[in-house]
Amino acid sequence: MWIGTGGAGGFTASSPAVPGRVHARRLVDARLARFDAARVTDPLLRGLTDRGEVTATRDGFLVDTLHRAMASDGTPDNGLFIVGPAASLNTPEAFGRPGGPTRVFEASARLAASLLDALGPGFSRRRAPEIRQAAGTAVG
Image 1: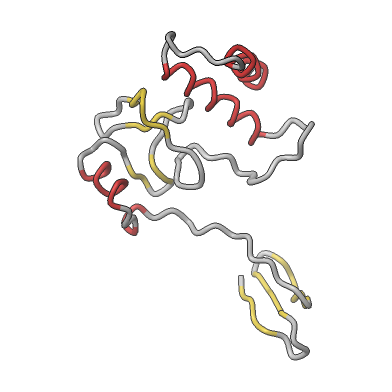
Image 2: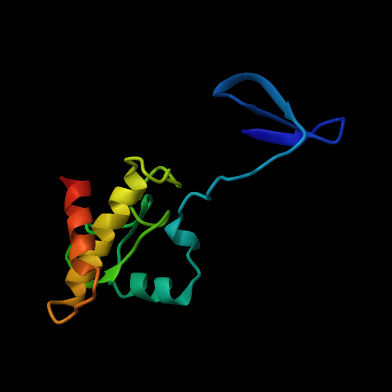
């Protein structure tokens, strides 16, 4: 994709994927940078990676279907969850429309259920059964 400033104070954009050029007065750049494990500078993430507690791939930090971080030996960590663009299992849609069946809400419900399970049977919150039920509905 190529973006430049237009002659009349606007923007011009083009892409090999779309024929022609687009001219606009306003521009919203909503792209996310592609994950690159080699560029991770955060001391926590770098330390987890260096110790083998998480596995960085070119698609993001490796997680299982419950969003649990996968160690370098292939085992999931029941107390470490990774979500978002840096997770290998991420939801391609960034925003969901309330009241509609979207993958973002389904993934969030599964994550909430995983977190409740990780907290253990001694954890009781008023809405815990409701969250587990929503996760079951979203998955099944």
